Image 1 (cartoon, rainbow, N blue to C red):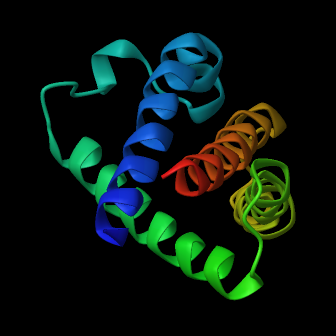
Image 2 (image 1 turned 180 degrees about the horizontal axis):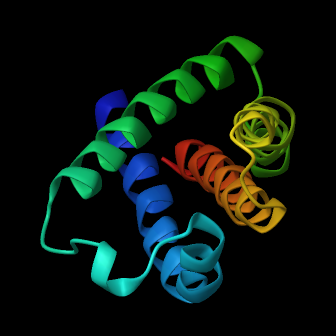
Length: 127
């Protein structure tokens, strides 16, 4: 069933985000202008909304993969990588440049988006 694939891909990407931002917590908070006392870790809304957003992205990615006719891990992984590098990250770059955000924040979030899209694509092809 396709919804299971989409949920699995979203979960894999979301879990990668948890690991990525745990590893990058210090540099990310510094670049975002945040500190531990400004972050409400008990608020579930960012976690829930980010998972729902991952489901939306995974659903569209499943559609892109299906209409492309590709099925191998390498080919589909390249779709995810390409979407991350050439579609998602340029939007992040544009938004952060106009918001005058630090380049480090752009890099951290761009790497997450690119790796997350790649992980989603690979998980989608595995199921």
